[in-house]
Length: 257
Image (cartoon, rainbow, N blue to C red; front, side, top):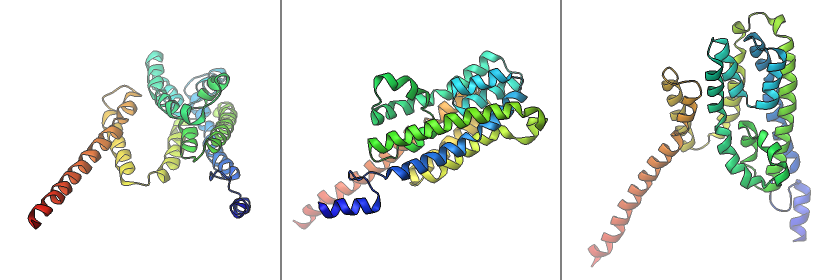
C-alpha cells in the first residue's frame, strides 16, 4: 500500500484510479474554449438575420445550445414562420434530454443545483463528462466545460452581434457552419469502434436523405434511430454466430461416441 500511494503521488493520479484533476481540467478547457469562440459566428449570423442585439444575446443566455440557435436564426433568415422556426429549434434541443438521463445518474447533482446543471447539458459537456472514470472527474469535467463554454459563448455572441455590420453580408462568410464543424471535429476522434463508425455513418445518411422532405429539426431526431438499428443488427449477427458454434459443440461429442 505505501508503494502504491507513493506511485500515485509521483504520477499525479488520484488514489481511486481516476483521471488526474489537472488532465480533466485541461481537456474541459480545450473543448470549452474551442467551441465557445464559435459563439462569434452565431452573433454575426443572428444579427445578419434581422434579430436585435437583445434578442441575439437572450438566445445565447437562455437557450444555450448552438445547433438550436443556428437552426432558429437560419429559418428566420430564409423567411420562415417564427413558430415553425421555434419548433425546429425545439426538436433539435430534445436530444439534450437524453444526455440528461445519463448525466443525472453519473453526476448525482444536489437537488438545489439541478436547474443550473440542466441548463449546461449540451453536446460538449456530455462529450467531456461521460467518458470520465469516476464521479469526481465527471463533475470536474462537466463544471469546467459548462462554465467555460457558457461564459465564452455569450461573450463572443455579443462581440459577433456588435461587429456584424463591419463584416457586411454574413452569407458570404459561411459562419453558420462554424459550430457544426467544431462539433464534428470533437466527435470524430471518439468514433473508435466499427459499431460507432457505422452508427455515425447511418445517422449522416438519414439526415441528408430526410432534410429535403421533413421540417427542420426532425431529421436529427430520426437519425437517432441509427443507434438501435445498428445494435439490433449487431445482436442478431452475434446470436447467429453463437448458435452455429453451439451446434458444432454439441455434435462433436456424439461423433466421438
